[in-house]
Figure (cartoon, rainbow, N blue to C red):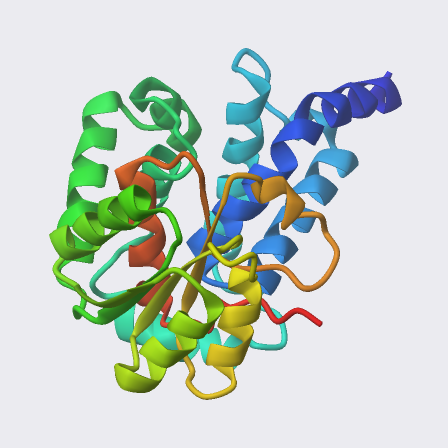
Length: 270
């Protein structure tokens, strides 16, 4: 019976795992740490099928198990690069507290409704609204930076530029090609890069980012219409992704998380 229950749960949650990994990485600020928590979550479910709550949809149940584990263990699953992560977290955790960050990401990045977030976090809907508002206020207090946008679609680039400026940041340039991106960085080194995957001249945004990261250390957020192609479980993988078509709140959340942890969120490809 127990084995059958575990198999049933595995089938139910399999489609949600890439998105849980995205959420975990944004929450922890690290691909390695986020994946470690996802693995631990699956181990909890495999060890005891009763730990997977019933009476709610399977996606909400999966995130609920994950967040209970994350809240109970705190930083104990930090992998080898923990010293880098902690140094950034120690600077910022006093301004953005864990619970508001959870609510903010569940809403803005994962697209859960307010009632669903209330169930996942075990709080009332008014509390969810309060937590999301608190996160927005705390994130807004973070230090503004200069941003390079690597995007070949003019309308999308302008949309992203507006979102970036609404957050209080400055756009140093909008690059449509690999060459333009590298030149822009040399002229005006950014504090954050937002990069599309496929560029106007057929070049790769990944290639542009790799070259940029050889000269400066900067967090990178990748933009793609197919996030599952980059979240395959095979290395290397990015820590921060925005899915096209995107919602402004999702972009804001990714930017805030990347800058919050001040992580090198790039993807090094061969």
